[in-house]
Length: 184
Image (cartoon, rainbow, N blue to C red):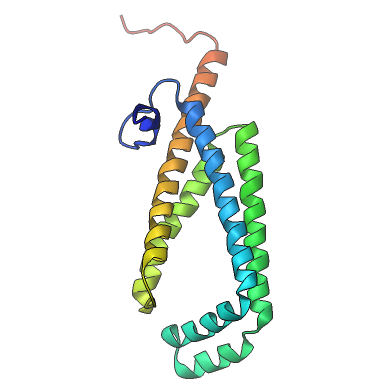
């Protein structure tokens, strides 16, 4: 089993014949991320009052009291509805990218998504540190999200490497024979 997952190791060369597998796994990962975004939209919709209350309370942690009071008054049900719609749009985007990656595998989709997840993996802890945001309750959600983001970064990097390998093989197969070496 470990041999089949060796394409995920970013520190070793991509094993022969596993470029296509890496691309397919990245396509499946895009579909899973889309499902998770859709689940987030659904769960936010059904808990919209609690989410709105939590958003209002979090303002006090990151803002001055007068700014928090003004912002809290502007927060309404429309804000949560916007978050839900944005999550649905994200889910649809990931579904489309996953379908495109499955049908026409390339290196660009995994590279772009890799960069997005790598940025989020680096920026969220920085934001938490700078704002002094404190979590209530057990940290399982944060730990799960961090591990998931790390795994997705590794998967999308492997997808990029697989796409790059297949591009190089295609170019080598379609290009005319390389000129003979002039060094004798």
